[in-house]
View 1 (cartoon, rainbow, N blue to C red):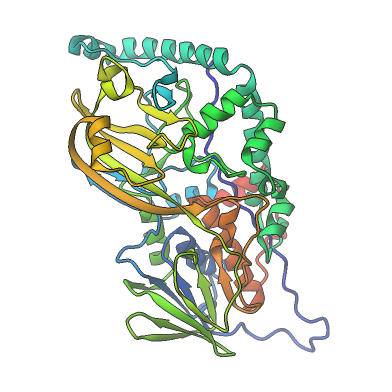
View 2: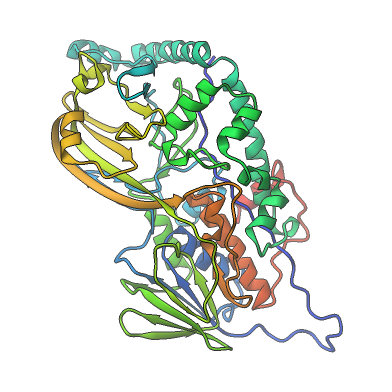
Length: 513
């Protein structure tokens, strides 16, 4: 029996309260105002807001009349970016998508993007405690080139892969017991609640706060406790929590709502999970959405102030330019920016967790890991929660030949050359990236408001204190688009003829969005 992989979960949470015209209105409501919507940030959140504003008004050219998107960098995508090593393109930021990330699925179809399917290979895993591997799965491969060629023959590969998958399942069961099944049940329960957010709009209200969204979905309690407490109450063993959860998902050790895979195409015991990415880079979703929405894109133009002047907002950029818009949307984390708001706004204080991603083209040093040969090193190395261990995970992204591969390293601190020279016996190329990945999570969470000033200044990234992924950003963005539609334009986004649940035709209806 092959156990299910630890699924990357993406929980996104929307609410849609319908804006109704005054009951004493003597005549039909007037046409919605013609206006400009300014969006700060060209990542998945900002591009999704632009997309849904146009999507919900396919026959109305004045809803809104114009969309302006501002990006302080020279490229779109935000925390979706790529690096190129040895002619291969790898995700440097948000890297993988799950089949139930339905907004991303829809974007891919809408924009006719090419999907990079999950790897069919079974990756071996190892849990490193800083001195030795406390657990390893069986790895396919040999130091003898001829044997490796034989293992690649279709029939032999099929038999060996299935045998290794079976052996690894037994090893996992022997070490972690039935906690694996309990974890599967925990994941499935969370997914069922998550699927509520893919019901047709007529069955969902729009929420003005993150708290209301989470409570409506039955997920709010997960933000009031640590993930470790939740898993302990679910009956998972401390060994599984300490090794698999904190070891293999280091960037989400504090989250309650998601397990996010830290490596492309990783699976436990060879079981497939359908993970995927966009061929050429996930950033293409943001670029395509902005383009198809007809938005006016301003690259390399940082907004430094937003002033509420009554009937409209005035945005000033670092280039000395000013822009007027009736609706303003902030779709980038405000934590490390210095945007001046007039009048001032109030946000809960939070600190972003920086994840240092290091790409290395070279060869791992078996001596560092206490092994005799490099072929014995697992393809994915997770670590225990120990500040003395200088990295969180190391994974193989691409094996170029018998002597060289491309690796991705996650760490809490920058990786010094001296450290890399110990971990690798050869380094031919090294690229370092510092991501402000997600907020530090400290339950119970206090959420920033979606509506920053009580009027028409909105904040997509308020949702990040619940979960920070591509899909949750898209869900929060859809909610913001509906808030704009109802609060400013007086539109109600619903499909009253369709009453569905996410477990039946609701999902299908969303896929045809």
